[in-house]
Image (tube, rainbow, N blue to C red; front, side, top):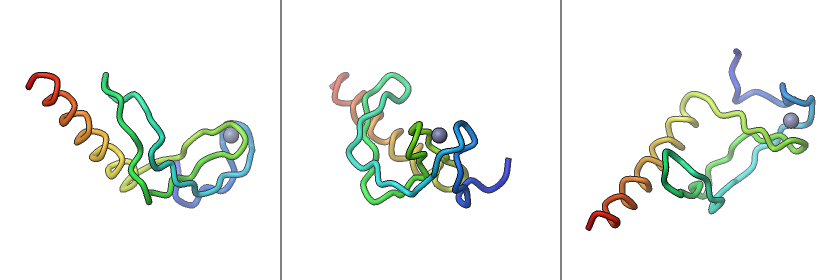
Length: 78
Ligand SMILES: [Zn+2]
C-alpha cells in the first residue's frame, strides 16, 4: 500500500477523500470509550466514511487513545 496521506480517492468505494477533524467523536478502543483528539486531520471518505490512517497519524491517534484508555482504567480501579 502506498502513502495514505496522499490518498484522494477512496479505495473502498471510489468516493472523494478529504481531510476531516474528528475531534470529540467517540470510539471504542480496546474496551474503553475514547474520543478523537481535536485538531488532528484524518483523510476520510465523504461517501462511506472510511478513514485512511497510516504511519505518524496512526501513531498519534493510538497514543491519544491509549492515554485516554489508561486514564479511564485508573479511574475505575481507583
Ligand atoms: Zn469510501
